[in-house]
Image (cartoon, rainbow, N blue to C red; front, side, top):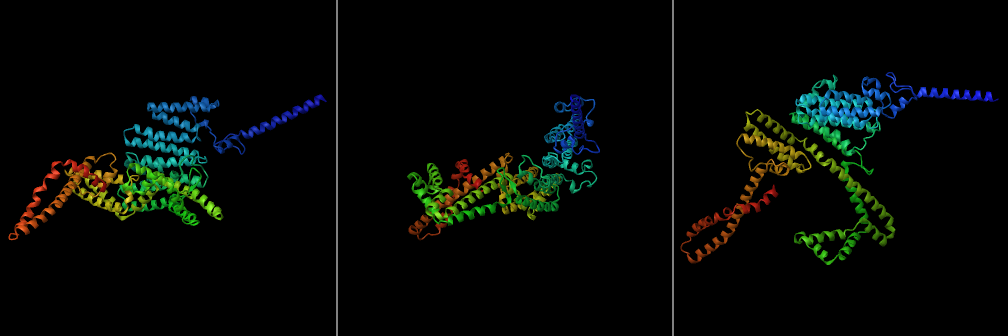
Length: 598
């Protein structure tokens, strides 16, 4: 009995062990080149499906310490060792070993998104600047971009892949298109067969860095919309506006290269894409869905709700305001009764406090309405809640629009399509070329001035372009700087009747035109003082002439011909004293007027 039961237990134990071994064998099926995800129920498949870090030991240097550590299960230690080596090689400027080390890290941490972002930035931005020749710098910029593309390829199913795709678009657009050597970089990028392959011919528009950047941004958006991936902590207003901004940068870049017809068409595309961005629902951090291009609609709904609430009891809000006004202290009532011009500093503060005190909010309005008309309590409460909701949406929409500078870019895309703006940029381009030849400074001056006249037309049609938050004024100021170089070569200065003095005054943040502006203020102040003095003298002379005429008619009726002579001599005496005795004083006082008018 005991022997039999012991034998049965052994058989059961053996069966359990066999089942466990089979299960472990199935779960432990490794990934192979023919089946990189492993078996159907294997741990290798689970590792791939859940984006867990893995290492391909077959690709690691077999003689390295990394291989020894990785084979012993110390992958984390191996990674730390390689990161330290990468930093050391960077300090020593050993770029060959740095590149090799990054390749080893990529095989140990293929699903660590931050690694790809950090090291690609490191190569493109930090390593590239260590070289003198722009071709060498471009090589490492491209290496960083290629490294990021490698990360994208290894993480296609990663939940955070939109972030890598967006960074790829940013690198291609900004690092190539905004670098100091962007002219050379753009040309090298267009003719880079190694990067683009043979699918697109060299120099084609599809190879333009801004359009390639736009394509990567669109791929990132597609990953979010179609594959339900995550953008992480990246702002949605920046993430979704990037394709349209790249299109604008493309239009700006080709116009700078002299392709104005194509640039005008590109701005039309940019305007449509920016409008589409304005129609897109953007999630606010509070969970609200906002559409930046529909601020006016939200404002109209707020106004309609305010009117509906007020119509429940016409005159009630005014009644409440009057009650609060009567309850104010006497000094606040007195300050409020005065106009702004009549108030002193203390009364301005008192009036502000009074205005805040008599303001009636919706809760006060609804509470009083509920007392006077209880049957309208429910309806008023619903309207008040809707009003709070829409007002909040309006506040957040305006805030996001301001952050994205939405109105400026919409206006920019609109005016850049106009023939006047295109002609203005054409004149600037031709003037720059004429001056670069060093043979036609007079022609360059003429072209600049014709172009500035066109810019004046644009600014008068679109005055909001002078908003300091925009970049159009800064762009025009660059043209003015080039124009001054032309004038310097001719021994001339910017004329007093220059049509874009307001651009200089508003956008010369670095003080490049400080001397010209000071001279202009002094000139305008002196001329203003002269005019004021002349008008005062004329006013003083008028009664003197009248009295002289009366005296001559009363005392000397027989000799009226002397009166004209006296009238002609009269103004000559007081012409000099007023402005010349102290020319600085009227200049300082009067300079405020021309600055304001400009």
